[in-house]
Length: 342
Image (cartoon, rainbow, N blue to C red; front, side, top):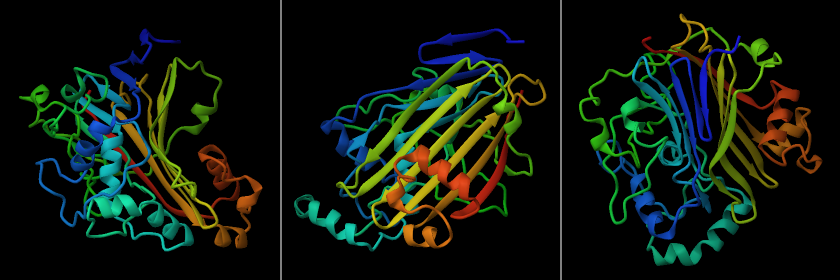
């Protein structure tokens, strides 16, 4: 039975969940500098420790695109934005890949490097991010579906929020914090910032894939790219999100995909799943995080296809390839659960 729900062009409301997608154009030149500065600060507006200053942002950066899933009974929302994703990139700060294309990338950026008098020329130029979303009070996203545009000449006040991995229970692996609301207006949350946000816990529960494979009507589906770069024609780096809502459940798939031609492939997938139709499961969100990667030489030696086969052409074909040859290339698999008040 399909329960009462309301579908709009940009989202759906069903069983206490208000799910919205916002899509905007590529960031404007005037906002790029503000965005660059914003991903270098934490939730209190302080410069992130160890910050080196950014030389370049992805060529296709959709700063006003994103997704929000607001759970109305608990007053908590899960959001996905380009700014928080790139904060994760800056704070994880992986060592730069030392491959031939890295020298080509630096050469292509020489004028920009000199113009900015950069102190450090080497950083993770692949934009790899550990990001898996952000938990914050629903009031923070009440006025607009996901984000507001950057104010001209200034940054909006950072909002109180908790990155999906900052409040994981003790004993778990944690990822670098991606806290700090880039474009959410702080005035929207007064009186709500002290709300105790839920904590992700380790779990043995898994996503109900049997349910997802059933031929159930899709009430709402959408997808959005948060950022993308062709790495100066040396491959592709992309962070994207898909979501679908069925009568019994919703599913979010956030993916970071990297292919450095002639060198390596990297795929980080985060799936969030909720059985919104069951009263005792309506506020339970399951999360599955997988990290897969390898050099093309390593993967080929283990039995995976070569890059020339076309198996790594885009994020979909790469995901299918890793599924077909699993566990080849699998670096980590983590299962977590978030319990919201209903």
